[in-house]
Each structure stands twice: as C-alpha cells, then as structure tokens.
Image (cartoon, rainbow, N blue to C red):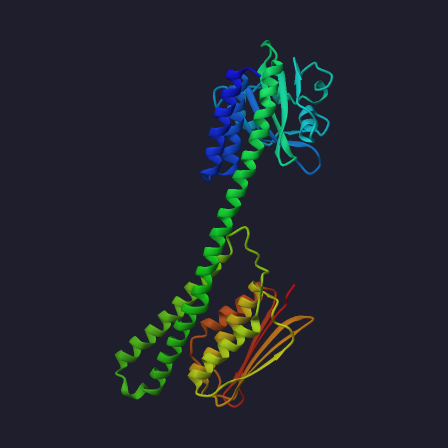
Length: 389
C-alpha cells in the first residue's frame, strides 16, 4: 500500500475513533466512515451496507463526492439510496458474508456483478467492496464507486479499503458499546428517581392527605366554613399531585427501550405497606389475606392492583366510619383478584368518586374488571380483577 495513502487512512480511522468515543450515535459514525472511504479511494460514491437476516444487504449510509446532496445515477439525491436492498448473491452480499474484497473495472458488465446491479447505480462503472466487522464477525460491506469512464480502482486502493473497513468495524463496535452503556446508565438513574418518587414521596403525600382529611372530619364543627373549604381544596390538590407524580413515574419508566414493563415486582410486600398506612389512619389494623404467589407479578400489572388497593383504602378512611376492614388478594390461573370490604356506612351520596372512576378506566384499559357495591347497611365492597396475560 502506498505510504501516503496508508497515512491518510490511519488519520481517517483516528478521526472516526474519536467521533465514536465522544458518544455520537453509531449511525452518524457510519456516515463518517462512508465519507472518509470516498475521499481515500478518490471515489464518486460510497455505500455502507449492513447484512439482513435473510442474507441480503441493506444500504444504511450513503455519501457522494458533493456530500449528502450529491446526485445519484438517475439524478436523485444520494440520500435516497438509503434503504436500497441488494440480493444475497450480489458482490456486496458475498462480501458481507465474509468473502475477500472484490473489485471490478466496470461492474455493469462484469459477469460477477452485472446480474445484480440496481437501476439506481447504473451510472457508475469502477467498483470495489470490502467487508467490515469486528472480532471475526462481519457486519456488512463497504463499497465505493466511480463514474462510468473513470479509471478502475488500483490494487493498492482496494487493499487500503479493506484495511480501512476492518478498522471501521472495530470503531462501530466501540460506538455501539458506548451507546449501550450510556442507555443503561440513563435507565438506571431514571429507575432510581421513579422508585424514589413512588416509594417515598407518593407514600408521604398519601399519608399526609389522609391525616388532613381525618382532621377535617373530626373538627368539622370547629372550622369556619371558609377554613373548611380551604382545607378541602388542599386535600384535593394533594390528590391531584399524587396522580401527577404517578404519571411522572410511568413516563420515567416507559420510554426507555431497555425497560421491560414485565419486570417482576413483589406485590405482596406492596399490599402490606398500603394496609399498614391505612391502619395508622383508621386506628385499627385492616385484615390482609394473601393467597397465591405474588413475587413475580409484572410491574405494570402490579401498579394497577396497587392503585386499586390504595384508592379503596382511601375511601374507607375518608368516608366509611368502619370498624372492620378486610383486604383479600388472590392469584389464580385467571389472574389477580383484589377485594376490599368494610362494615361502614358506604360511600356517601354526593361525594366525588373521581378515584373510583379512574380505577374503572384502569381496569377497562388493562382488560380487567372493576365493580363497587356500597350501601349504608352493608358497607362497601371494592373488587378489582386483572388478568396477567
């Protein structure tokens, strides 16, 4: 290989490595790889093709001599070549399967390449392709083209292209690894914040709201009407804040590609926590009955059950005047069933049931079932059934 060309290839590889390690997206790094390959090979067009599962290769990045706005053979922008698919038996397909570099003086007429030339590339003649990958694993093919009538690529240029493509494969693996590590770190931080919001802040707000409501009911006669209204407004605002924080928790957890909404959670432990808080506010411990295995409930499903339990217990604390409350949580082949029963006076008429409406909407959206049975003589039963599949 010509020493000057080798030095230029080394400089280009160093630039690409720096770009990759700076945290740029691997797709952006791939575009830089193609651009430098075009410059080094004195080509008019460069393509980076990635192997598909069926053995074909798909153009992931394209670069023309005038940049991304350069025109292809049919007069269209080079950028439109992205997504172009070549067959398994094409020269690029063979190279992507791990064969040696291939070069042709005119790939339009060369018997190895002519049957597979797409219309979009028929304005080109001289052609060279080299595999790129890392650790013995070929990711695809790096190809360069010159316009019809230009001289073919020399053996030294093809050798340089092969060395540069191999180096580019290593760089792309570095870029993908750095990107993956960044996503993991970001996800872990978001999950930590979501857990802190859900397990600490929401619980404190919930307990505070219950205590304020209890004070309001116990001291109703001693409050001026305006003060009672302000306290009621404060309780409503706490309820709204809790809902907003829950929405934030869902948003923090759901957008990450790495997050699995089916990650198991211990629903039994969550239920014990909810019942304990309600017991402190009621002045007596509700009975909790668990039947089945709850350590592997998908997080999304567990969130629905937890919200239903919290809302049901909130209604017991606020409205029922009950002396007994029983919580039953059952898991069977059909899913999870929650029952919250109390012997109080039922949900008073005229009381806002926004939380209960939310539970009904939750159940409908998740393919479950919610129902409420309440009367002054029999107390209240809240039921929330949810399938796990």
